Length: 287
Image 1 (cartoon, rainbow, N blue to C red):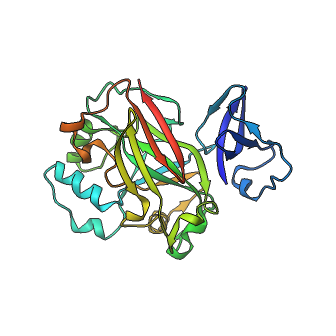
Image 2 (cartoon, rainbow, N blue to C red):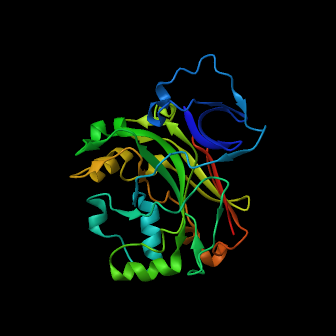
């Protein structure tokens, strides 16, 4: 299933997307994490082009965001930009940082340009949503705790990030001003056709700025799989429904990696779209 949340004529509803222009609204008694168990037979689809409909963040409540650093090519190139080589520890465990949950944006919404940066960047990512609680989850059981995947954009202030990284506590203010999620959440059952083998998925993803393709990558290139990310995140810690596990920047998935001297940093008026044949299109304008 492809699950979205929408404001339809003033009512916030969970819907199942059934086509480019159609969805099936669910009644208010349906619990979000039970949607994929709902029998939709006989229900009338609703046209997405009629009436007033605003796309919301697919998950009703984001309880936490752990953003990992799991694509080796991105890590290598991003570190090289700072004059650094790879460190042995990166290969030993999947590192992550926590991001804020108060500035989450849906597809179609505008991203305010932060006043504290002149080097705004996008980061093309995939986000997994935890649908079943657990602690000390084993890798072989990890995917059963994931409700589905969605696209994500981890907006970043690069000039501030460089300073923060020198302190040694990881990125913070350079990241927590905006995270985009959506447009919908695709359940794991729907993604079986994209499962390459075991816990590795073949999901292509691209990023466009003002209609021009900047980035092209694939989830299968993760050094650490989502199963490993969930396993590590749950060590000694209970993962809850609504926790977000983000992949980190997909290879080629940001201006920093591609070269700001050629492309330039994002500016007001730029439109960033992240697209995937499996996960839809997440689009935001910088204002």
